[in-house]
Structure formats: structure tokens, C-alpha cells
Length: 175
Image (cartoon, rainbow, N blue to C red; front, side, top):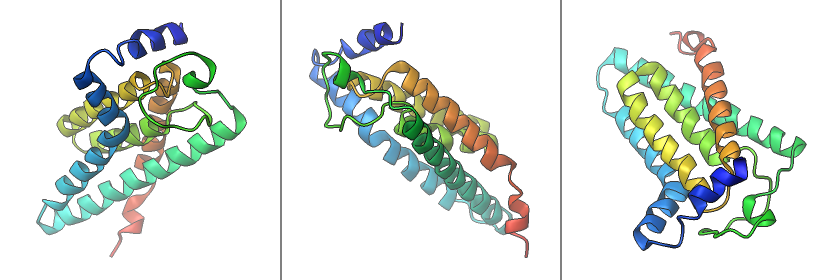
């Protein structure tokens, strides 16, 4: 079922140049846009109360991304799932080594950021969830991840953001 869903998405690749452009952009570069947007939004708050909130939200997002990426590395060391292009004939639109596929690191990071923002601001978080979903979809579209790799990335991103949210940050920023 995982491979069938992968084929459904990846078989759209190579048909329309604009869709390929979007797929590559979502898979490779949208995560950087998300980080830039989050940093920009955090920088526009001016007053002193917002300054502390900004620092805590930024630290939580960074911690969530760090926790998620470490967990991703541990999982990939324990479970070496091959990438789709290493096992099947698929159209691969980006250069990627044939290292472990599960979970998707891009998806882990983008969802860790999205969840971190959602915990602070629900409306803005929804925007970041949409962007993060496009990152995950892009990773499947370009042929480097299966849908379950992306789902695993979503779950790890959510877990790491939840852990980062629950840490006692108020003690870190005590005056």
C-alpha cells in the first residue's frame, strides 16, 4: 500500500515542467522559506513581554528541530529502509544518496517547526502545517521518500515539538 501510494504521487513527475518545478521547490527549498518566515515573524515583535515570548518560541522551535533530528538519526541507524529509487524504477527529480529513507528528515524538521509555532499561535501554525505538508508531499513527488517515511517524519516532528514545549523554559529565562 505504501508503494502504491508512492507510485500514485511519483507517477505525476516528469509530465509537466511547472509541477516538477514546484515538487523540487517543495522538497528541497520550502523548508528554508519556512525558517526565514518564522525568523522574520519572531523579529517583528517589539515590546519587552513579546521579546521574552519570542526568545522562548524560537528556543522551543530550535530544540524541537534538534530533538527530532537526533531521533531521526537514531532510527536510521537502527532501521535502514532503502529509498524508493534504490529499490524500484522511479523518476527521481533530485540528486540524493541512497542512505536510509525512514523517516524523512525534511519532514521531521518542517513539522517540528510547524508544531512549535502552532503551540504559540494557532492561525499561524495552520499556515506552517500546510507548508510542512507540502514539504512532505514534495519529498514523495521527487522520488526520495515513501509516504510512510513522511508520516514517520510528521510523528517525530510532533513528538519532538511536544517534548520541547513541555521543558521548563521559564527557568532558562529567569532574570
